[in-house]
Length: 291
Image (cartoon, rainbow, N blue to C red; front, side, top):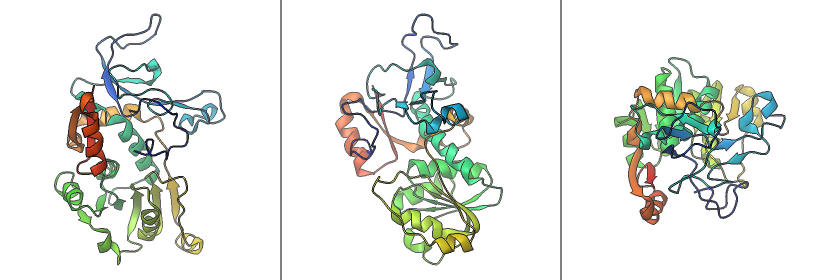
């Protein structure tokens, strides 16, 4: 959605979208060194670093200054075939379906974000936004032993967060007005200035706030520097993934959480217009397109 609305500055024009993808290996270039075989189910890390900038040389390839991104700068997964570097392909265990496997890329980003939150067992965690990213953060926070409060204006998503995915409580944003400075860790998974400011308000003294949601490039927030100082807050952001694709595949294979339920709609490539309308309507979670 961000790409097609022109909100991703580095996205190239007329590129086939689709950066959250899984697929079966159809062919392997001659001379390629790999344990993968034709027919292997793989997930793809869409972020291809340059391997030459200071960040790549400092083991931070996710911050690369000149990356290529499958589905963003080069053609991606919304097609029957897509070429990918062998280094970007990760083997998927037989126990994971190709539909569930395509969650690996967003899950890898959430793993990176949750790592930044440094959750400890027993922490009170708030997650703003009960969309797919927020639900993934919920599942990972629960596995870390946290008590998680989900906040979302959508009643259906609040219900799913509690009844299907195990949140301690699911609240409407209006119900948090008297809950300032209550949480050890807060994850903002919406990408709006209002919720980013709210995340800071909900963090108690000494807490960590992680901005996960993707905001517009022209968005701005208003935060009191004195309050950040007085409450000794740590405000962090997370960007893409950081060596976490294989961890994501392992977590999906573990089946500790009902990952497949995040995918609420599935369409063929010929039904893409219908899939896009469903996606825009926000009636479900993840919408899967199967070329």
